[in-house]
Length: 300
Image (spheres, rainbow, N blue to C red):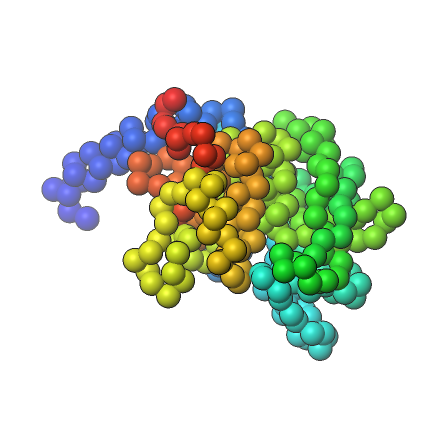
């Protein structure tokens, strides 16, 4: 870069910082639940950028809570062990053997990898699963079409005391597994888990990282991206949504209907997509808001 370009770049950087200021003020002290998944969990560069972003959020006064799955890693290990891989409406069919493997992968490997990554970037993270401190109390659920999909759980209760105690000094990193009162273990869809945590904590925003730019009304038409939708609009459209987008949108709907001011599907393939969504006027992806509310405004 030439010396002549320096004033232009400096001015642009200052404008960016000034643009972020009202958003930083808006979110200061607020809890933001982030469902971490997709390419942001597998691409080495995106993993580093995610950890840096989370560290920045904590430094500027937000309380980030990370909820993660690990679908690709679970699938990889299942294939190595010659176990059947099957999904129904974006939910993994899980017999007892699948759940045991999922717990080993999510709690023993993926969770600790995320914790170490965040720690290395300057903030202290603590790994949790739904079993720790009875964080998640679960029961068995079926697929949206009523089909039995095995030991897939729905979260009936979140022990917020565990999370608030940890979040006072650390960044909680939560693996999406849990158990019922009888001690049966369940694989929990990470989108559902993030929504349940956001509702229980009274989060200001729930964010879902994925591998698409957002919700497309027509999955084959890039021109049908929905930048914003109300809960009632989404509720009407949801029966026509299939695949992995369905549980994400269902989780967004649950979150905003239960009091979270907004839920956002964010393209995790874009570096710093979390910061772009939170701290810039442009935003990212698809935002879902309650029927009675407008999207939050910076500085409000």
